[in-house]
Every structure is written in C-alpha cells, then in structure tokens.
Length: 159
Image (cartoon, rainbow, N blue to C red; front, top):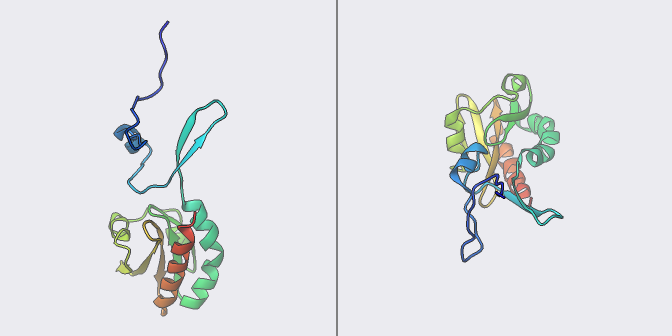
C-alpha cells in the first residue's frame, strides 16, 4: 500500500526550526519578518498560518481617521504595506482599495517620513515591523500625523 502525501517533507534542525519551502513562500507571499501563527489541532496536526495585520490596523486606525483629518487638515489616508485601506477627506475615494505604488512600498521599510507625489507619508512601524502608513494631502500639521503613526505602531506590535 502506498502512502499519499500532500506536501514537501522537511526535517527539523537542532534548534527546532523547519524551513518553509521557497515555492510556498512565493505562493503565499511570505516574507522575512511576516508574523506567523502556529497552532495544534485535536488530531495532532500542526498548522502554520500567515497573519494579516491589516484587520488589526484597520480596527485601531479607521475610527480615528475623521478626527485626524480635522486635526491635520486636508485628506488623510491609511494603508497596509500593499494597499490603501481607508481614508477621510475629499480625495479618499480616489485612493480607496488601490495598490500602493512600488516606490512607496519600497520606501516604507526605511521607517522614515517622506513625500511622494503630493502626499506626506508617515510609516506606521513598531520596533521591528512596518505595518502600513498614514498619508496626508494638503495638511498643515504633519506633526499630528507622525504622533498618531507612532502610537499606532506601538499598539500594533503588541498583537
């Protein structure tokens, strides 16, 4: 009788680590530093799942975007590391659920505020991770944006 297999076999190393095969990392867009959840099922199976921090970021930030827009002025937007996920102000519908430009994605990892095509961009980052960014267009108070991004980054790293 032949045993059926559904995956790639890897051995556990001396430190208890298993390498996720490159094919799976590409297929599921798993990058270094991505949060992964490890859980056990009743049957003894171990499940590895990539965690999407977008939901947590949205739960923390979206309710405050209207107030942030009033404090900063102009339009205020929120993104994860790939797409715009929300906003408040006149230009918000123009950006809603669109992919971030490659140049913005690349610069978010620098963890420093920058300007890009008329948008003031402030990364939302914790000690080790970048979760997304806040954006302002036409704002007169970018310091408010930096303060809120710092608070969000600190809150996000606790998840």
